Length: 167
Image (tube, rainbow, N blue to C red; front, side, top):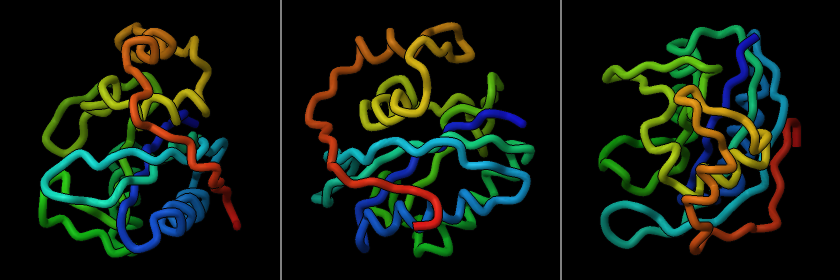
């Protein structure tokens, strides 16, 4: 089994419900086991125009699925929840990103591992820290605690909302 971290985000059509449905769908993936779910965070949207705030979380998954198959399954979950890919960084019902896939590194047009913006986004790093030990080391040798020290929390807020499989 490979340890995988998946970022979840939504800012349309009841974002908390969108995240919960995605956690349930991820928990049901074949050859996989949902191991942990972070707290839910609220962040300002990054992208064009006026957009509602996002809700973000991270899940830790143990899986036997190859990275490309997992990506395909995550995109199917997004599509089933009304994801429309019209505008880069535009509002969306659901965004699921593979942040880390074990210690694998990859950089191609379809999949970049670790995720291209992992180290720059507080709405990814703080929920990642909830489900990953801060002494954990990324494939490039940088530890999570160091990344957190260099990425201020800013306007990122804990919501008090929770997510869990089978709710």
